[in-house]
Amino acid sequence: MEQFKTFFGNSIQLSANPAEHHAVINKVICTFAADCNYMKLYNNTTNAVVQALEQIFDDNRYADKVIEKVLKQNSKWGARDRRFIAETTYDIVRWYRLLREMTQAGEREYWKLLGGWLIVNEIPVPAWEEFKGISASEVLKRKKDAQKIRKIRESIPDWLDELGARELGKTWDAELQALNEEANVVLRVNTLKITKKELQQRLYDENNVETSSIEGFPDALVLHERQNVFITPSFKEGLFEVQDAASQFIAPFLKVEPGQRVIDACAGAGGKTLHLAALMKSKGRIIGMDTEQWKLDEMQKRARRAGVSNLETRIIDSSKVVKRLENSADRLLLDVPCSGLGVLRRNPDAKWKLSQEFIDNVKELQQHILQDYCLMIKVGGLMVYSTCSILPSENQHQVKKFLDNQNGRFHLLEEQHAWPSEGFDGFYMALMKRVS
Image 1: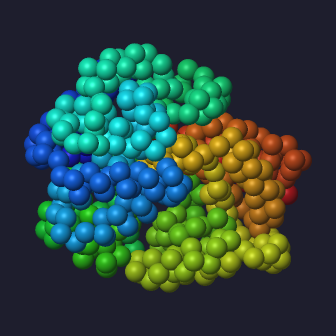
Image 2: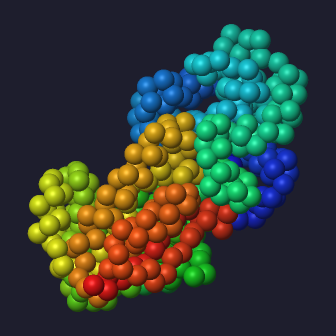
């Protein structure tokens, strides 16, 4: 439901009270629906939503990839139709449990979920066979009852609600609510090529893209409205990357300097690696490492677009790769695999795909990376351990376990949290120094 907040800018204020919170969301959606003439539904677009839901839940596919594929199927769909399909699908995925409770839908009854979504948003349900038997009064009655129970109101699995409450205590309520809100689109200015003020003006001149600065984030611009910025000449020229504001905390936290030797050992496709390169003014050397070659190939492609000239990539296909770099880095970034609970607002289907077993396994991997990869840092060098999780068991508890096992070879200098309730994604980072 909160997907539509972006179209109204930052004037929408969400209450801390759950009932008021959802009332505001519902009002926003209804206004949006009426404004965009979504009151009239079409069989082909509603079928597309149901088809997307089937692939996400039945075939266990990622929502973003599914929607991308579905939207490519019909070239005649206009922007309004495509937005309806994407936003409605994401909304139903995010509120899947709540909608099932309200409609009493069984597994694979996606038309019922869509019917419930229409009723909640005061959009007339067409007299179609697919919606037969759905009672608006019953749906709204069950919705009122469901909102009294947090795990149903916030639409989250039992085990995940219990885990969050156990690890975060009273703060879990606020963080869980924030994870169901619309994620802002934030850009990171590529300071190797342009200043923030220059990019801001250029985006407006090129595509009427309006942005604002964010206090405390020197290289960040937040979009006033959600737009496809990847088609702009500025993006194609490498003047910016899309990167959440909280994610932009991490590279500066490593305190890199031009001329240093820096290793990003869990680099993925290189978002933070490119930020490090910009902070180093492309002077010195950055080694981006990952266990998957396709990610490193994508990083090189992005680096060329961004004008980064000091990047080298290495695939980690054996323990020898890490051992060869022992005692070689001035700075080391370990942005480790994690549960991703801090970025659920961007990936709402993840809460239905996650499991306790997965989180237990990823915590073992995190500790393995910490203990084995830390050898790449020189004595006197700095290392950052970071995750996009908000769970202490993946964050400060992992750092404590690492430090205890290192017997004084590393000291914790500083740690920092970015909480979803503060407006952006959830991240944790710890800065450590190797002292012996």
